[in-house]
Amino acid sequence: MAHFMTLPEAVAQNLNSGDTAAFEGFTHLIPHAAAHEALRQRIKDLTLVRMTPDLVYDQMIGMGAVRKLIFSYAGNPGVGLLRRLRDSVENGWPHRVEIEEHSHAAMANAYEAGAAGLPFAVLRGYKGAELARVNPNIKSVTCPFTGEVLAAVPAIRPDVTFIHAQKADRKGNVLIEGIVGVQKEAVLAAKRAVVTVEEIVDDLSAHPNACVLPGWTVSAICLVPGGAHPSYAHGYYPRDNASYIAWDRIAADRDTFLAWMKDNVLDARPEDFAGRISHLRSAA
Image (spheres, rainbow, N blue to C red):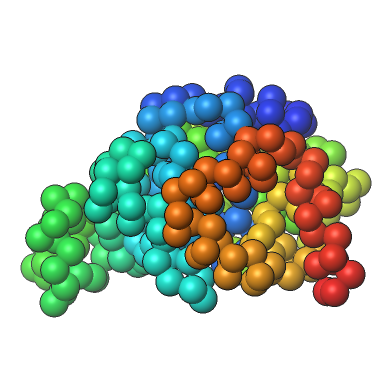
């Protein structure tokens, strides 16, 4: 059942060093504030899962918080490669992360399998591709009904999933609008789930086809306006494209990266996120 608490309390109670964790959100609603709080609490040795690792995982990798990355595309949207991830894989700085690469389809199906309590996901995929040569977790099964050979990947079942959403009501139900991605499946697949939200309301006012996570699927809800910045929150503020472009320069140099992380993450607070988006709200 969902409990309302501060973000530092939620991270301390639900995320431990050595956990497998997903910080999910597709294009928007990416839980940057939650990931930053994990870094402030010096949580280490994480296995991170995400369909599209972008700035948030580049930061966590560069700060040495990650042991392994399970992903399907790693890049800075609109700019290119993730420099801290590349430095880790190629040069072992600050240490070399283990990587397990999949396709988007495989990751989505693996989350779905985890949400359903199944041990693995089956899909038509990887035919003609070479990922199976470097990823031993891509296997094949034969359909007992048709004889068709299909791809199989392990279900994703995180110890904890973090997502950002637009609203939660006072009963602990959560509303996600816009591009939903795999947030629902990532929450249902996890042992624990923490949701940061833009606002807490008396009534979600959800339309019939909205994605609503009932309170019993969520462990903790935290009020963090702006908690998705620099990604966007549909209906609240647009994506901060300037921040994504600037990150390419910041992440290119180790010393510049460390200085930026100290000033903007380690020495910052969750409530600072609201201030960062004031100019975006006015422009929306």
